[in-house]
Picture 1: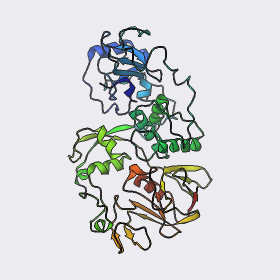
Picture 2 (picture 1 turned 90 degrees about the vertical axis):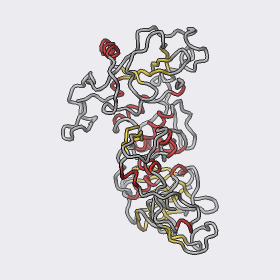
Picture 3 (picture 1 turned 120 degrees about the vertical axis):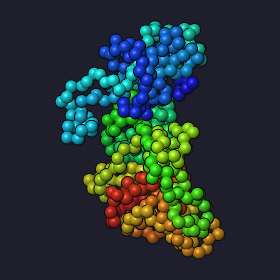
Picture 4 (picture 1 turned 30 degrees about the vertical axis):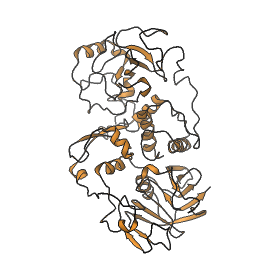
Amino acid sequence: MISIRKLGLILAATPAALTIAPAVDAQSFYDRRQSQQTVLVSPEGDILDYIPESGEVAISRDRMGRTVLVDRYGNLVATEIPAESYYPPRDRGRNRDLPGVYDPYQDDAPAQRGFGDEVTTASIPDIEPVEPGNDELPQDMPYGGPDLPPPDDMAPAKVVTPDIPVKTNLSRLEITALQVFLDREGVSPGVIDGKMGQNVNKAIVAWQQITGETLDPNNAEDILERLRMTGGMALKSYTITAGDAAGPYVASIPEDYAHKAQLPAMAYTSTAEMLAERFHMDEDYLRELNPGVDFTIPGTIIKVTDPGEVKTGSVARIVADKGLKQVLAYSEDGSLLAAYPASIGSADTPSPSGTVTIERIALNPGYTYNPKVNFQQGNNTKILQIPPGPNGPVGTVWLALSKPTYGIHGTPEPSKIGRTQSHGCIRLTNWDATELAKMVKAGVTVEFID
C-alpha cells in the first residue's frame, strides 16, 4: 500500500482513458450526493469505482487540508477532490470554431453539472470524521489530529528564489505536475523527473517575472487547476508505434571520440531513451512510471508526460547567466519570453565574457573534433568527423557564436543540464535548444553575465 505521505496529485486519467467496471451501488450512492460534486481518486490516479465500507476506512486530512480516506494502518485509500477540478465542464469554454478545443475565456454557456456515463464516480461513505485520539488510527500517523496545518488558502505563500531550494510537501507526482506546467509555459525545468531542485526554482522565478503572478510550489490544488487550463493533466497514455520500435538505434555510445567517428549516426540507444526525450522526461523516471514495460513492442500503451506545444515567438536578445546556470530569452520589447536551465563553462574552460552574436544556426549538426582548437579528449590527436544525432557531442542543435568554437547547443545527457559544467559553451537539453533555435536568427546578441 502507498502511505499517506506518498499522496499524489491526480495526473494520469482522462475521461476517454478510464476503463472502470460498473459499480451500481457506488454510482447510485454518488448520485444521492451529486450536489457536492466531488470524486474519490486512488493514489494511482484512478477514480474509485466503489464505496469503501465505513468499518474499513476513516476520514482524515492531508497537509493541504484535503479530505482523505485511510485504512487502519495509515495507508492512503483515496483523496476527495472537486469534480470540476478533475474535469472541465463539457460545454463551458468550448471553442465553437475549433470543436473539442477548450477555451477558458468563452463563458457564455452554462456549466454542466453531470459528467455522463463514461466514468463511474464515488464519494465519501457515511462515516463520522475521526476525532483526535481515536484508536481507529495509529498514533504515529503523519497527518490529522491537532497538529494539522492550515489549508493552503490560509497558509502564507512560499517565496521562491532561484538559489534557495524549495522545501516542498508535494509528492513525486505533484512535483511532476508542477514541472509539466512550467514546461508548457515556456520556462523549462529541464528534464521532468518528479524532483524539486534549482532547475525548478529557476523556472518558477522566470514564470513569475513573465506573468507578474506568484506561484506557490506547495499549492497542489492551484497547480492542478493551472494544468487544466493549459491543456489537461500532466500524464497521458501513449501507444508505442512500429516506427518508434524500429529506430534506427545504435547499441551504445562509446566514450572515445575516435570510436564515435566510426558510428553511422549518433542515434538513440533505445526506444525508451527516444521516448523520454520526446516527452521531456528523465529516462529512469519514464521506466519508473511504466514498471516491467518492454518499450520495443509496438502497440504497448505507456504513461508519459504531456509537455504541450513548443514555445513560439521572436527572440531579440539572449542572456546567459553563468551564476544561475540559466539562459533567458527576451523579445524585441524587452520582456522575458522563455527561460532554460543550462550548463555554462567551468573554471578550466570558461565561457566567453561580454556580448557576442549568433552567427549561424544548424539543426542536426555533425561535429568536427580538432584537439588543437577544442579540448583534449582522451588520447585523440587527429581531427575527427563525428556524425550527427541526438547523442552527438552537441546534440541536435548548434547555434554558432561570433567567438570561434563557442556556441549554444544540445546534449546527449539531458539529466545533467544545470547540474554540471560544460567545455565553455552553453549546453541545453535537445528539446530546449531546438525550441530556442526556432525563435532566433543570425545577429541576435548573447550576453554573458556572472
